Length: 231
Image (cartoon, rainbow, N blue to C red; front, side):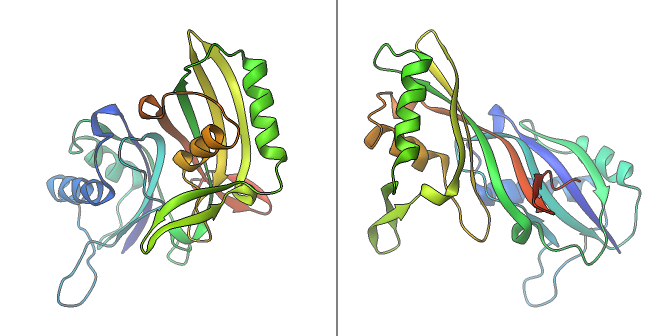
């Protein structure tokens, strides 16, 4: 039995895949690669693989992670090479390493996610003006947006889940933002919710339907430091 952690990217060609479709794409790629997948027991056995965190439809990502179990122990390089040859366009594996059997599930370990967002401004704003709007938003005692819950609209507090938010550049009417937010099973802030707060509470004027969001990293907590799950 071998257990592996795989780092992969979801590029523009796969940006509109749902999480379920992403799981199926990997399952098919694993079958085509001829890798000896391990399966769960029961009436409907499923491949033993678990993803770190779902990435939203329309969002690309440079750093995604999944844990995989195989019935046989192979070299990590073998698993990496086989998957590289069978994944569909838009999905690419970056690295693979063996992990000990008792390493906790990825989903339980993820603490934060980092995103880059590109916003088409509807007003002519400078970087300094956007920085000022962000600072005023972060200074608020509470940052609440309304989201659609299972029982209808509900308020969601973002304040404690925004670890970093800043403008990195303004170019030709587009603002470039970097945000690092809480993510994982202990709480999750979506980048769209932060953008909604910027628009509704900080009165930053941009075209939300033109926003381009790219996830640049997922992080786990190792002795108080946020690091890649591959470390």
